[in-house]
Length: 323
Image 1 (tube, rainbow, N blue to C red):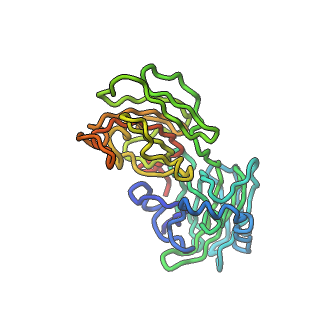
Image 2: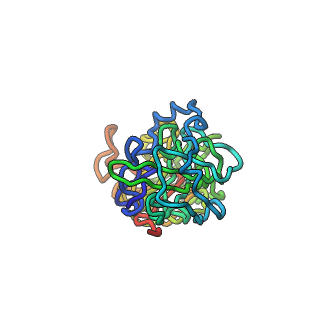
Image 3: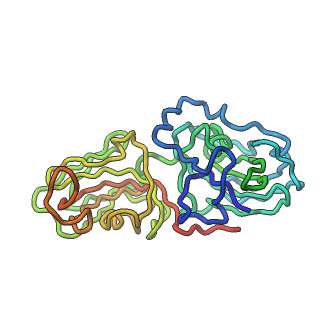
């Protein structure tokens, strides 16, 4: 028995028991693409599945954000997706396009047995971008952080009927939120726009011959480890002329995700050992970037590169969880 994958997560980065399988609501990929933010006008309140006899039959105790105590009479007859709000959240409601952090515990609707739980500890689940047509959006609706929902899923071709308790933990900011740190002398300087987008100013002199990393903001979250998936915003400039060659901020300000081992060495050094919520400045020579060669306008060979990276979320390469 497996949990339905609310988030589009790499098979190498999640627990096979907890997050493999098919959602039964149009596929497992529930992370919205940048174009999905065009659907921000869609009211998530209207997207939330209605309560029903199955979801209403589940008794839940405990506070949102911690593993719940659940009771229901099994087998539970689940004919369609149902969602019952157990406790309301507080603060700003979520809207389509937001990235959210959440936790969930799943049960077999036929036997009543717990299948597993995940997300209650830092680093277990990547923040997910929510949309009105995703399973997570249809469960949480336009709830606010602290909301707890019982969701009853009918059986699909690949999974038996299941019951979830889903907690909305937080709305993830689009820029690093950590405590500002003192600048490092001799490194590039960074100015931030109101939305958090950085402008990088290079110092005079020769480019460094070794990778340099400085923390601009120190976050208070999970510490990124080798092989973890990360959710980041970034801007990269060429040392040779100061021109920006790539930036998530220039692509709608939508964060992107990847493994720390799936990027060049200098970028990897900027991520691993840092905490979620941090903003990191890294200067990397060609050897730890895109390789030695003659600097040109078509690729990044020979370039010393400068990145400002906002670390917004992370998921352990092998999440710890219960089964």
